[in-house]
Structures are given as C-alpha cells and as structure tokens.
Length: 566
Image 1 (tube, rainbow, N blue to C red):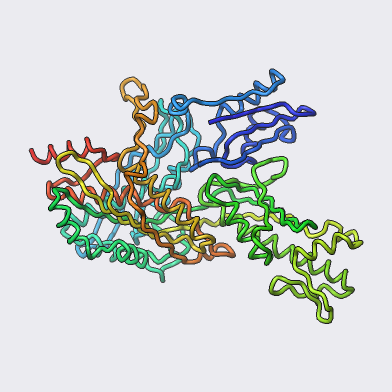
Image 2 (image 1 turned 180 degrees about the horizontal axis):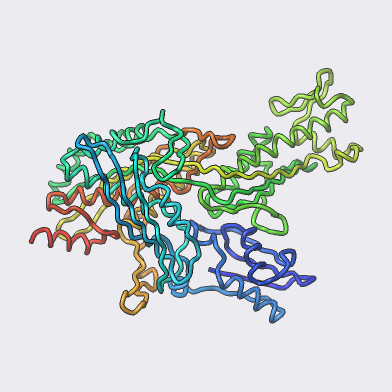
C-alpha cells in the first residue's frame, strides 16, 4: 500500500494512490479533511489487483494529504509487508449455522441460517454480510427460509469486501449442507441437486429472502460442467489413484451470486480530428484488461478500428463521475453508458452531416459505419467526419463537434451463476492434497472478450482454492497477537500447486441492460471452496469423515484421519 501526496498550485493537493475508484476516494477524502473537493486531485494509475481491498479509503491516504498540507512539501507513505498484514483490510471471516429441511423424496422444504460477521475493530463495510444474506438459498428452489444476520466488533483488522463479497461463505455452507444431506439420507448428490435447482421457466425467480434472480439455466450449467470434467470417467481414475496409494475424491458446487455496485456512471466520448476516439470513463481497471474490452465495445458501437480508441480513467481532474471497479459492475455499467453515448453521438453526427451537405438531419442514415444522405455522393465514417467537420464553419449549436457526455444510473442487480467441479488426490499418510482437475462453468451473460473472461475464471479459481486449502490469517484468541506476519506464514497457492483449469462460458443474457451483461470477475471464486472441500470429504469418506474445516491443510487432514482411525 502506497500513498503519495504533493502540494500543487493554488492550494490544490494531489494524491497518487492505488484505488478501486478515484472519484470515490476524492469525495471521501475531501469530506474527512474538510476541504473543497475542487482543491483535491486523486490519480490512480495501474493497480495490480484490487479484489475489494482498495474499494475503501485507507487511513494513511488521508494522513499523507494532511502531512503534505502541514509541511508544504510532498509526503510519501509505503507500508512494509509486515505492516500490511496487520493493518490492511481483510476478507471473509463469517461464522454461520445452517439447517435444511427435506421431504422424504428429497425435495427441499425450508432452510434456516444464522450468519455472524466479524467487521474487525471498526466497521468499514457490511457488504459481505448483506450480500451473502440475500443468497443463502443459492441456486435452489427452497420455498421458505429464515435468516438472522449479525455483525460483531473484535480486535482484528477491519474486514472489507473481497472477491465475491459474502457469497463464497454462504455458498460454501449451502453446498456442504447439500452434500451432507445426500450422504446421510442415502441419496445421490447430483440427483438431489437436480431435483431442487431453480428451473429456467421460473425466471425471473424471487428467492425465499426476497432476491429476484434475473435469468439462468442452472441445471444445464451443471450438466455441462459434468461433461467437461468427464464425470463418468471418475471411477477409473479413482482405481488408478488407489493403485498409487492415493485417495481420489470429487466435489461439485453450484452457485449464484449477485452483482450491482455503485449505480452511477458517466462516459465522455470525443472523436478528434486527429483520428482518435477519446473515451473518459469513471470505472477503472485493476488488472482485468478493461482498457481492451471497453475499447472493443466503443469500436463496435461506432464502427471504428479498436486501435483508434483511447480509454482515459483514474484522474479526477479528467474523470468527474463514476463508481470505480467493484462488485462485478465495470463491464455492465460501462457498456450501458457507452451505448447511450453512442446513440447521442450518432444523432450529433447526423446533424453535422446534414449541415455540411445542406440537407435535413432526418434524411441522414448511419449504416455499416458510415453517414450518408440520399442524393449525396460523399459518405463519412466517424473519423472522416471529425476531420472534415473540424475544417467547416459549424453553427453554434454544433460547435462542440463530435463530442458527447452521457450519464446513466442503474439499480437492478444481475445474477451470474455456474458450477465448479474439483478432483483431488489425498495422501492418507501425510494428509497432503493434490488438485488434479478443476472445471468451471460460468454464465456471465454477454461475453465481450472470452480470453479476458477465461483469465478472470482462472484467477478466481486460484483464489477460491487458496482459501479452501491454505490461506489463513491467524490471530491468537487469548492475546489478540497476530501470528501471521508475512508470506512465509500465509500460504498463497502457487503455480505448481494448481492444475490447468478447464473453463467454459455460458451466455444467458440478462434482461436488465442493453447488452445482457452479467459479470465475470467473481465467478469461480464463489463455488471453489465448496467444490474443493466436497472433493476432500469424498476422498476421505471411507474413514467416516463428514467434514473438514477450512483451510484443509495437510495437518488438519492428517489429524482428521488419525481421529477417525481411533
């Protein structure tokens, strides 16, 4: 975490800092410091990852601004890794108790959940608690549910939204519950899920705690995941693993999650005489490749080369409105406001062409990327029109040229969904786990760039697997002393501990926005913990083991095996 503040002319302060949204940082910091927002500039350049940890302002950012004003000189703060471990915002930390009532034929009847969220030493965000609470019934048609959600203060660092805020926790509880119910009632775990998944014809579907799912083909997702994972070939692989002294298990997890985020977004598009499309947007990338996918959308809407589009973001002297990157909102909000801006830009282009060719704007057509009048010999692309109109003496109402500002406000959530399947080998002598296969199927709505979406899926799966197997920030309960001080203690997954992922994209369009986009950034993270633990428990079923607490470290698994042997 680094913040760098410097005094500028006329009393303006400039903050260079990693953030999930420069506009929000400016507003929050100006409020805290009691200064005119016009006297503060926030600049966010490349951010090598966010996942929610940079959505809220850090105390140190305000302090460097205060110190810079006090000293009249630039001030920089950089946290060491050890400092970051004890002060940076953390994720997850939910204690949940869940119960499921079933009919004798396996139909789900009711569910009860009690969720207790640790917000840390001060309440930074209740997003993980609230977002998870709305999805306790997951993909399943559970007619009745009761829910109790509470937050508690503790001595730990504050918790904050972390990739798929609140959803992996409740999805883990539900999918482990379904597997447990199937095992204890002697039911097939796939058929039990199949019998209770929400049907496509039920969409839009209102779940038992009031969330309205927009669209989805949950059973088809599960079937696709099973085909890609070669579900039918598992027993042969299990026998092969047994010959090597390993226990092979498989786990499956369906999921649905919600994406909404800050509702307001603005796009400013300017087609310049130099042949460039300048696009200013309030949301911003944090390593997801938004510069590419945003440019693709604008290029498609305006029928211009994608290499002619420049995406500008992250500087509050340029960007005035926008919600930043969080909650899977970026592509959906950006594409929607781009489509609004493109329509306005096309109408403005028609007026300019009409003036230049002495005709009526109603007569001008925009088709196949070109403006044309019925009897005129010359047609224009957007780039050609910008060049020619710059040389024309346009009337006052058109003097701004090919430039528009479009605002949009969108409050409807969307519900990405899918299925993940994990296969793993467990060494019964050591408790070591080797993930041998991982399959992810994600319904992202309209997919703008499949390569980027697959990259998101791979990263999301790695984060979910890390949570399931190794990641833990441990605080001594008696003293409050953190016992995880560095990456020597915090076991991140590494390339050699993960398989090559199999990922498939499903596009069931959402009716909530013009492109039908849902979200892609949080998909595999949500089902991965449950899929991994279900696989480990399946591998250990011969010992009579019913559950393994995350993280499923070799020591935890080895101890569970030893206890079962007794």
